[in-house]
Length: 338
Image (cartoon, rainbow, N blue to C red; front, side):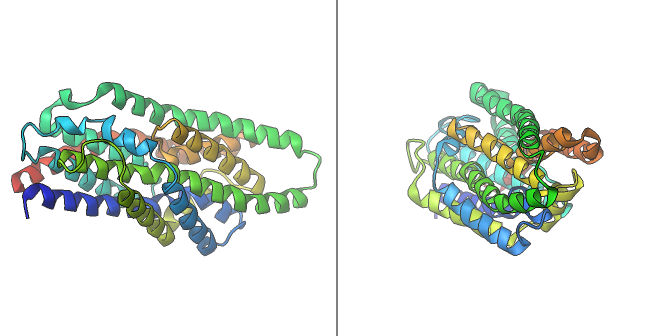
């Protein structure tokens, strides 16, 4: 077996592993509010999320193409025929992203799988060929989406909750809770679907990038087997669940009632799906957590536990640079092996 084929096979395995880990790492984001308000039992919520993630993952490919070509041009990674640099870069990026995801999952920190993957791709590529290798136009576009989407989600969550307060101010609390608990089943399903449309595509983009760098395809089209494999990995990972992160997202940011949960789910699903439609990868973790904060601020600013929010924001900020450095280290090690 030649070296490029071996590395490409390893990339596919690691990309599917990343997708699986992403599934149980980010499952909590989609269902945390519905579980915390007891609209759904955890196991039912997780299985529903797995199904909707799978369906969502098969529906779109725009984000996958952005990951495959907007950060680094896969065709520029190999200087000559038979050069394995591009394949090693992608494998190093995956090793870094998986390591960071497992560390943050273990400690129950809702960090961003998107941030760590994008930071890792950039870091591994820079480690291999310097800063000039980056596709700055595409990379900055993705960074802008990652930075702006939490603020947009915060604003949408605030507006959504404000609207709900006006529309349902004269309804008895028990009726409101009952109605919104039922509504949360639908909003949690919608949220899981939108999560699949955006997050599962990142692994698809990585595999496509590896196939291009390995000379196994010439365009950025996502092959059908890649779409199905990534959708299955995401769905299976989701079925495992992530109870530690559910606890953080669903309860530590603010005390969530059914009306809050429905408003947060609807707000974040709108922002994530909007990003998918314009082929931009966003952090579902950031968007969902920010929507919850926006909803909480509309309800009562002091009701939001801003200390927890600050710790989460700090994790968001450090994820890209730490992932980039880790990926550069992984590239150096793997380059010695291959």
